[in-house]
Length: 111
Length: 113
Image 1 (tube, rainbow over the protein chains, first blue to last red):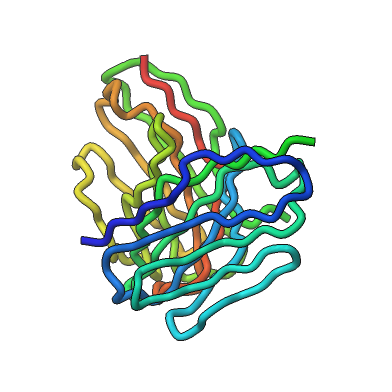
Image 2: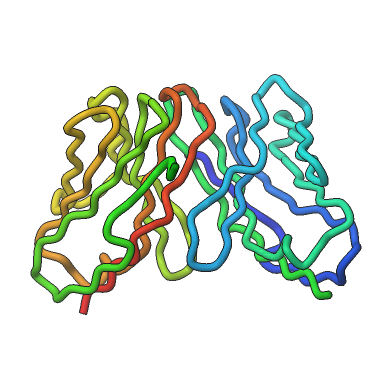
């Protein structure tokens, strides 16, 4: 059974800092991994999708990496802004379409 | 232009009642999902449909019955509501079932009193 853990559970940083969010999973037989952002009271917004054959994906100030063998993914946010404040979730997907989510990291970026 | 929409956004009801939540996607996707997010923000998949066929059913009480009248719709009917059913329910869709990127609806906050 796949288990997904995200560390830290909460993170508070001053504006402008670079930061890393971590996601670890127990079963390396994944199809892909997806990072989401969830704002309070809102749905999930997809940020990045990394296929199991890829090592990293980039979108703007975001960079996600994947190391299947060690069961880890990181989401790197460069030059953080207050608007980045949200909960970030990683999800492990199988090729059958089943997703297992982590508990999320709640990020607060202080002006 | 809403890609995945859900109705209602909020639902407050009493124990024992039966209620439905509707979901529609206009992305032309083949696969749709229902997730439950509890008070601790833990998100867990409940059901998945691909081309109107049930493909994932995760240990969900049979009081919950999904129905997919067509590829663009996946509704969730809940019988005999219990206090523990209070949560936010999210609908999502993806191009196909093979681990494609998922797009989420805004959620339906269900409160059972």
